[in-house]
Image 1: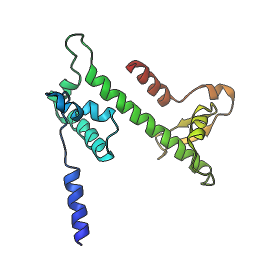
Image 2: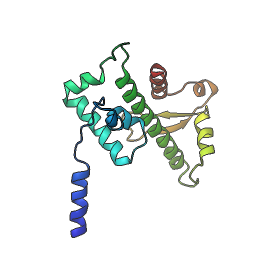
Image 3: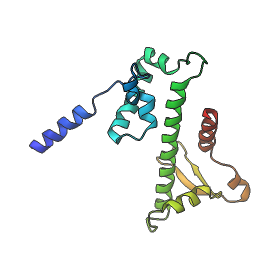
Length: 169
């Protein structure tokens, strides 16, 4: 019972909403800003809190949302938005790759071993695989293209993701 209470208290206090500043007020605080935390490799709990803060500011805080989209002086560049958007797109790309790997494993009925790093790059460059998702299906399904014409057409989500990455560059 005491371990359960300790675990419950840890969950309550460790996942309490935290507001990360978007721009540092002092040079020492530069590592504690939302764009810097999202672009670095912090502990998973800290990354979770940063993403939670991003969710809350996008939903409830018009003042902080305005700060995200503000342009730099001088130059007029959206540095905050570029850093935040780039990392969010990278996280979506990583999640998509993990889903593809899990779907390939599930499609093989669990008879395959976990793919190594060399197998991953080979499986993603394979032109005859597409990721499709239909609204009535609970999970995306990996299908094999029937001919070369279908194999040349990447999925719409993948195209959208690539376009967003190119816009950031």
